[in-house]
Image (tube, rainbow, N blue to C red; front, side, top):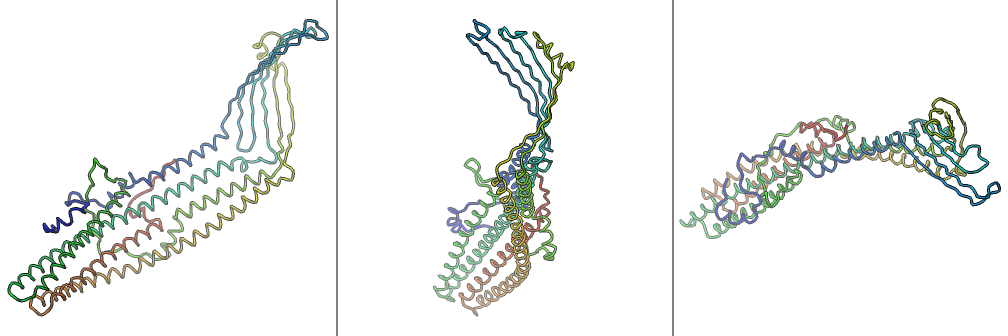
Length: 493
C-alpha cells in the first residue's frame, strides 16, 4: 500500500512512523508482556506491598529480645568527718547486663545480672572493700490496660491488614494497566486501519481524477468536475496527514504504557498491530458479571482491609481507657565477697543468698478524658469505613451495570454499522457505474464515496467501542487476568 509521490511529500514531515513490514508485527500478548515488565506505574505499585511488609517487620520487632548493659562509677571524698580528722573517700562501681522480652500477652520478662563493688576508707566500716553480685528475673504483667494478646498485637495486626490493603491496591493497579494498554493497542489498530482506508480512498480519488481529465479532453465533462476531483484528492491527502499524526500519537501512548518510549540513541520503533475484527465476545449474564465483581473487586477487598485496621485501632483505644495496674514479681540469687568479684558470682550461682519481691503499680489520668475521646474517635472512624464500603459497593454496581449495558448495546451497533458499510459500498459502486455511463454527475459519486467513508469510520469506531466495553467489563469483574492469561504474582511472600 503506497502513497503517490505528491502525497508522500505532503505526509513525510508529519510521518511519525516509517513504513512497516510483516516482520515488525506487535501482537497484543507481546505488548502486555512488555508492559508488565517495564511499565513505570506498575513498577511503582509493586513496591507498595513490599513497603507494607516492612511495616509488619517493624511491628513484629516490638516482641524481639532486647539486650542492655550499663556501668556506673561513683567517687566521693569528704575532707573531714566526725570520726576521722583526715576525712574519708569512697569508690562505688556498678555493672549491669541483661535481656528483656515482651510477650504478645503483654507480659514483660527481664533477666539480668548485677555486680556492685564498693570501697571506702571510713573507719567505721568492718571491711573497706565489698563485692556483691546477683542473678535476677523480673516479670511484669499488666492486669488492666495492656492486658491480653489483642491489646498488645493491635499495631501488628493493623500492619498485616495494611499489607492486605496494599496488595489489593497493587492488584487494582495491574488491572487498570492491563485495561489501559489493551485499549491503547486497539486505538493504534483503529488509526492504522483508518490510515489504510485513507490511502485506499486516495487511490480511488486519483483514479477518478484521471478519469475526469480524460473525459475533459474529449469534451464529456467541464473543468468544474476536474476541479472537484482535484479537491477530492487534496481532501484525501489531508485525511492521510491527520490519520498519520493520530496514529503516531496513539502509538506513543501505547509505548508509554509499555515503558519503552524511544530516546535519542534508539529511533522510534514501528510495528504493525492486529486488526480490529467484526467478531465480538458473547455478552455474559449481568448476574454473572456482578457476582464476579463482588468476589474479586480489589477496591472492595482493600476497603475491607481498611475496616480491619480501624477495628484494631478501636481495640487499642479501648485498652487505653483502662487504668495501668501492673503486677511485678522479682526473684534473685545473690552472692557477696570482700575482695573478689569472681567469688561473688560463684557464691550467687551457688545460691548463697536470695531475694524476692512482689508488688503492684497503679497509675491513671484523672477522668481519662483524652483516652475516652480517642476511643470515640476510633469508633466513628470505623463507622466511616463501614459506610464507605457500602458506598463503594453502590458505585461498583453502577459501573458494572453501565459497562454491561454498553457492551450489550454496542454489539448491535457493530452489526448495524457492518450492514451500513455493505449498503454504502453497493451505493458507491452504483453511482460510479452510472457516472461512467454518463447517467450521474461527478458530485453524486463524491457524495456516495463520502457516505461510504463515514460508514467505514463508524464501523471502525464501533469495533473499538466494543473492545473497550469488553475490556471494561473484564476489568470490573476481575476477568482481565484470564483475558490475558496472567496470574498476578504478589511481590511479597
